Image (cartoon, rainbow, N blue to C red; front, top):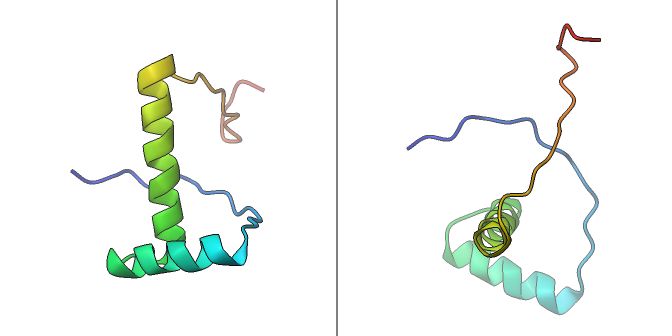
Length: 68
């Protein structure tokens, strides 16, 4: 199953050195970039959260929308 490409946000992210090194080892062992591994971790967290708490409803403004 292929994913539809969605726009992405670039955000600053700070973690301590030990966490960074551990995540780097995990990402390398999974043949992923560090960023891809973090994205997967966040996706998994959100999925589990929504299983336990229900869907998170969000509203995204569409800059191409004609309803302005």
